[in-house]
Amino acid sequence: MLLGIAFLSGCASISEQNAVKLATSGKSASSSALSTIFATDSEYESAMEAEVFFHSYAGVGKPSGLLDDWQQVKTELDARKAVFSRLTTVYAAFGDLASSTAPEEIKSAIDGFDKALNSYSALVTTARPLVPESTSVVVGNIASRLLTVRKGRLIRQSSVIIRQQLERLLLLLDNKLVQEEMTSFKENLRGSRLSASRLLMKNDLLDPSPMLNDLAADSGFKAVSDARSIIMKSAPLKRGVDGVMAFRIQHRNAGLEQRGYTSTRQALRALIDEHKKLEKGEPVTIDELQQIVNELHSISNLLSGRNQ
Image (cartoon, rainbow, N blue to C red; front, side, top):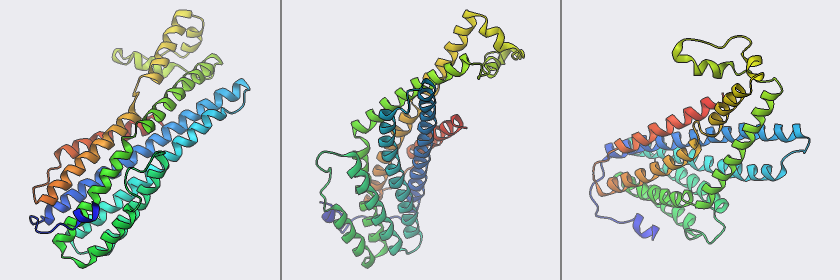
């Protein structure tokens, strides 16, 4: 079990340099995952505004059912933010531990991460817990004993605890129900955003010129000043503009949130593998992890840019 594994002795010597490298990569990965969650939250909120506008315009009041779904999704996102925020703190403390001596900091960071993880687990799992309820107590006991051991052993034991918590988090993120709920919710919002955009276009509140400029970018041309009035008088042109609008809303950058979710899980798997290497005294390699971090950065930037 957790306690027995954490206090194995007689292992290969720990490289403090490898521990610092892993801590730096772990902090970068958790921070990037956190940025993606914030961007996803912002994207969902922006899409919800289109839903509220469309229902209000139609005079049918607020979409209470969808608002309830949104609150559930937002609650999950907020809990996930707390987990990865704490994980960032854990890796910062782990790096300090490896480069200096900071047992109190790593104990506090591990305790904080475990509490956030317990809260997230309670939120996303309705069946029996994936880990024993006593895990928090065990981790707390281990963290307390960390203060009494040598630095090399302290680094290894901290790594074991962090890895076991990452494995637990990965199990929670692999929950199909959470993924399906997010995907279904976003598909509904995407349809609402398209309906709202069509409504605004129909009522002369949108200017299609930027879209036309994009279409003609390679030729160096740009839309004429009365492009909108010309389009609205032509059924074929209206269909063309509507088709591009629908494509952009439904397909351009579609699935970014899911890509971020998937990349986050990949990052956790890579971190778990590197922790195992560190604990065995093997060299830590971060090339794969860095590629995943770059992907998370890209997704976060795309989501953030889409909401500006």
